[in-house]
Image (cartoon, rainbow, N blue to C red; front, side, top):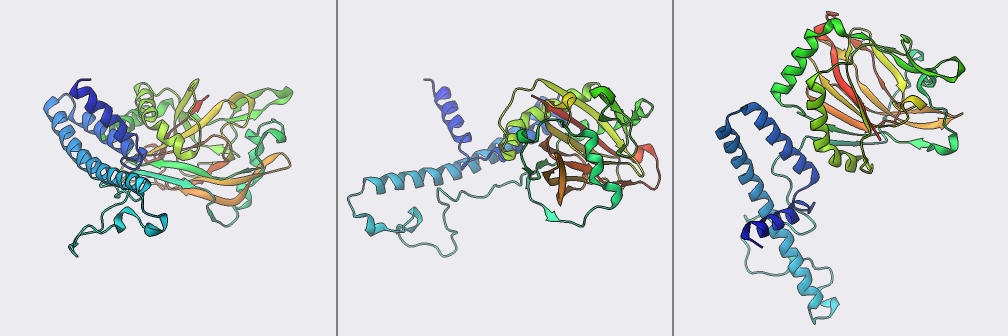
Length: 364
């Protein structure tokens, strides 16, 4: 093997060790590099300069953690091959072995089981259920509306309890990508149409209908190049997201995406995103938040509920994870989870001041 091949092989081994570089940190570095590339445009020198700075920081962090892990492994091997009785070192860890006088100002060295904390903050936030108990929703948010998008699959084939869980990533698009998306949406106000919901029609057919008692907002279906930009970014973090959600990797057989504009009084009652035969293959939901600055609306929380089966229908346990819309933030969660969008308040009622999301579903 050439020196480069040996180094590449060693690097591959290091980045796959979660004790040295976690999946969240790998995703963060990838996002930073993508943002830097987009911001620098065609300026090759700027791209290389930013890459060099990041490489130096990552290299120092990886080297420090690798030394700690390697040292711990070596000590463990020495202990395994030692002729001393096991009791002589009972309860000892590598850090307990005397290695000479220690500077009282020097911090304790990391152990193999306790790697150093990340040198940079990660935008990943995993939000497991159950959530904090909340007051029951008023009658207008009743579970009765859940039936609108409920599946007719047999109860025995569905879990009795569905705990709320999601993954939230901040600063998902580069500043230029966010700016271009916002400008595109504002320029296409005339192309937005009333939101529909999936409903069971007479005779068993399933169709999309406008139901203002269940959902009120406007949607744009043609996203031009912005759909490809979003999907490329989603695919780059998908393995890490699925790992955090406890979901297996899957082959994507289809993608749906749309921009939703929610203005004064708009909402979306309890529902599941794969609750009918027409949408049963939806597997993972994504919701990307963006809006014009400064923000001119309130409300519009995404609430993902702990739920259980009751008479063949999923109902809320009155516990939920609440995600307040934040600029350039994306949320991922399994499509079967019961969720809602709380009413939006927008004093100006101007379209440009709406709560916008680029939301959609990955099918399997």
